[in-house]
Amino acid sequence: MSTEGLTTSAYIKHHLQNLTCSFQEGGFHCAHTAEEAKAMGFWAFNMDTLVVSLVLGLVFLFLFSKVAKHISADVPSGMQNFVEWVVEFIDSSVRGSFNGRSALVAPLALSIFAWIFLMNLMDLVPIDYISLITQPMGIGHFKLVPTTDPNATIGMAIGVFLLVLFYSIKVKGLGGFIGELTLQPFGKFGLPVNLFLEGVNLIAKPVSLALRLFGNMYAGEMIFILIALMGASWVSFSLTNTLLFSSQILLSLGWAIFHILIVTLQAFIFMTLTIVYLDMAHQEHH
Amino acid sequence: MNINATLIGQTIMFALFVWFCMKFVWPPIMAALDARNKRIADGLAAAERGKNDLALAAKRSAEILREAKEKVSEIIASGDKRASEIIEEAKIQAKLEGDRIITAAKAEVEQEIFRAKEQLRTQVSAIALAGAGKILGREIDATAHNDLLDKLVAEI
Picture 1 (spheres, rainbow over the protein chains, first blue to last red):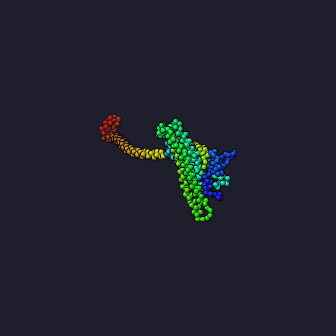
Picture 2: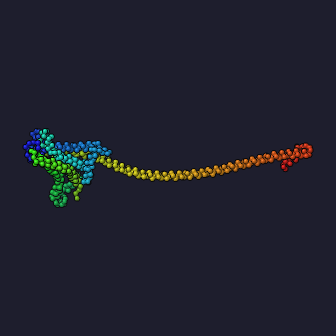
Picture 3: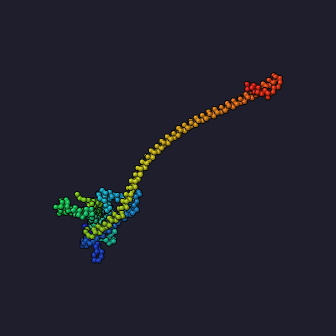
């Protein structure tokens, strides 16, 4: 928005472009355009996604481990109260959906919830403010919300998927897991059909996790960008421009308030689905 | 919006965060929560126990009070009995003492009477002798007529 002569589509593209960097020609270079980023292929890194999610993850772990270090069973106060409230909420969610006994699932759920919540929360930072910091540093593109980058959500979904596979095999044995994939619902004579159905069922888990979160956050970010465009059309003082500008303020306020719900809800859904998938991995199918 | 190696980095970060959370965050918090739950449960149980103890103590104190009252009335009754016994005994003793004093006094009086009689008797015999002497006109040999005189005295 600060750059003159920016078209609407260029503005949108600018905001949807990650800071993609890779090792090329002996140095670490960052792409300036979408085409350049595409040309980098698979072995490139979205530095904005990685840095922001790393910082947010560390913020979460720092706060919680600080409380955990000094926690006592006496009357809690301040930060400890908040942390205990979150932990108890996660614990009751896990107890409600997960029937097995596992030392991993509850902390996993807490990490997922807190991390995704913080990453989603970045959506509430006004979209053009981050460039006030990054532009002077010479960074062209910077997407502040890691969950609007499919790499982030797919990366987490892969983590969950690996855990699902690990626990499926650990609980049922390799044979049991393969049997589950091939011998139902139609018995051993319907093997190809079974494999297809169960395979889709299995693959659908990480895909649903990754794409639901990405889709929701991406759409939310898109609407923020479109709302921000209303005021960007300001050229001169006129009735239309004033109306557009004030409706930008009102709409972004309304969408941001609504987004507080989405932010929490999407983090909660990702967490709950993870718990449910791991619960299914622990159970024998009937 | 390309799929690239970011997702590998993200997966590794995810795994590290979960590991850290599982190792250093979750267990101490849960331990503290469990400890507090246990403490609250213990406190409630202790309160319940205390209430029971109180009721029991009240019952026991009432019982002790009742027993003490019984004992007191017992002691008072036995005291009364003992007092009347002592009075009875004192009365009997006083009576005996009185009787004894009376008897002793009587005996003394009798002795006095006897002694007075004796004196009287000797004086009477002396008078009689003097009278008889005067009547006979001569001295009677007291020693020669002693036995006669003694007879006379005994007769008197």
